[in-house]
Image (cartoon, rainbow, N blue to C red; front, side, top):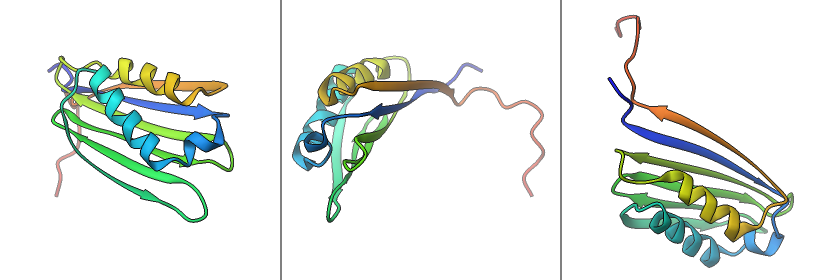
Length: 123
């Protein structure tokens, strides 16, 4: 069985601090990333922490895009999961890299939902 989707884990380091603490900018960026990936935006939820930091989630018809920020360290953790073969999560990663201007980034990509081999039965 082929995988059901692609899961990208994007880590952004040394981003401008003001961008990582701007809840509206983060939500607009997540939506822009979803559009760049060709995904269907369904809704959003977010929380601004005191004194700093944001957690935001964009719900997609294809799955989700999320970001958690630590402005005090310049770090953002991004999670993009899209099901099917129409959406292009790497484009979302490129969009967010451009939006948050990190000095360094790391991207890991995983196929999700492939065949499971020799798993013990669940009891």
